[in-house]
Length: 382
Image (tube, rainbow, N blue to C red; front, side):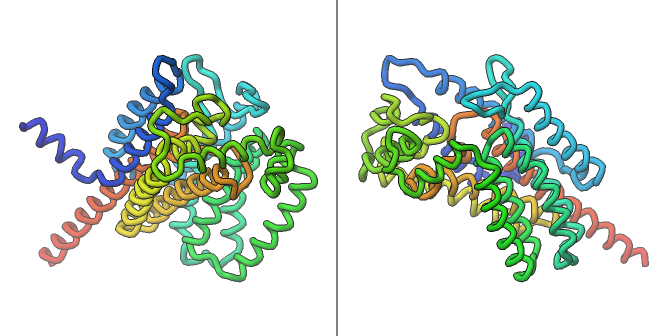
């Protein structure tokens, strides 16, 4: 009993609502990867290991106070590490389906872009926390944009179009939270539209253009570029109200739906769980995101608030892009959905982000208590 009591005190600051909701999403994803009875699946077995590792990482991540993250030298070192990892991908990364995004370490692979997103959130939170009063100065927007653009560009060149979109969304969202003016926002949108035109003409590969064209008219090439999007919408629609049952999704398990464990796991889930299951899943995501935003609003300082906002933006961006891609509202970009898709790098990053936020909240509150006590002692002495 004493051990249990001491353990509960250690983790008393943990937001269990957010954690349980995130873990539930991960377990739903695991069930969706479950093969037909009698079949074997390396995805299912490996994801169990990654969920266990991620949960342990989350609990450990909630313990430090993270005062070191407020040091410019540490944040600069983290950013340099992210750039180095992304650079090494081009030298030592393995090519999978035309993309060079990961290191193959034998039993598992590591995708540095996922950790780079979390590091970018820390960098931007540190930058804007010190300059939020002067955010109206366009120089701060350009400097922060340069930090994000370097990571975004390296991810895009892997090529990982979906990852680049998420990184750009994180930067734009954090700039908006920091207090960008509407004039500067309009300028950014204009630059973005022009850049999109240039990107279409000179930056996108033929297969990426085909994906966007197939998004606009998916029935034009069902057997080619539009195949994935078409099969995904069929899977979502075939779930109807109550779904076909856990492990009984024919579109996914018979491989009519490609990459059902990663890029199209929502479609596979919707086929098996139906509309009611989708509403339940959306409710779990709402709990995670609302709790993260609640923690951000309760933050003791701007750095923690901006970090929490960045984490929420990362979750929402991944969620919207993935769901939109699966139901035919957005082009197929190969983006995972938070906590649910197969893969260790993104799952570990998402649980770490949640744990770090809770550690930051606790550390900030304890620091405020110490400061209040110091001020009280000083007043008494006076």
